[in-house]
Image 1 (cartoon, rainbow, N blue to C red):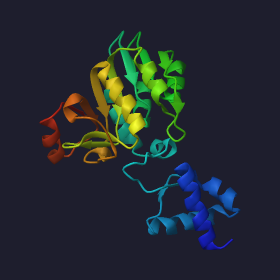
Image 2 (cartoon, one colour):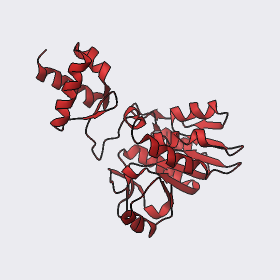
Image 3 (cartoon, rainbow, N blue to C red):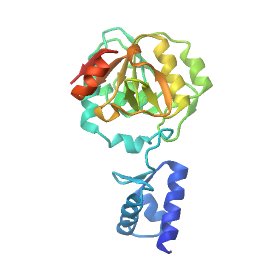
Length: 248
């Protein structure tokens, strides 16, 4: 197979799936992993994709949500710091909403509060919660392939059956003017409704999200408490004028 043919097939698979693994491409193209690795390096140089741990993803766009495989290996240490701080905000006996996402997923091992009830739209989340013997409800609805998040009208209807003491939401962007944003409008609807049904809202964002803006707005900065492991002095001054920051 010619090099350009491999390139076209790699981009085609990425457009179909959003993220692909090195071994998957090697099997698909009947080529060695070293050959595919060189292909990915070249395609990244052409700014057609972004290499990640064990594979590749399409370049980030404002309307494109990274897959769970990509996000799992990204900024792991920072996410754990954020997750640990967020888990400390949960008190005994509270009912909380836990958003789908890798940062909120990282909260689960750190939850120490007793008699907590959790509602989530994350398939992986409910499995981890049940393993820890935390009372959990999984929203019904349409499952997103890339992120394993439940979204759609059925999920929104499900959500209206609950009221929360607190909700913990992930975000892809934190901007002083544009507020909190995420690439998928469907997922934004779920996050926004959970926020409306909660007594207090926390948004979890590692430092890479500060100053970023993606496609769909959640709500203004002032409507939630921001939890981040590190915020630059310049950003901190601007954000602190609009909302409380819990920082590691």
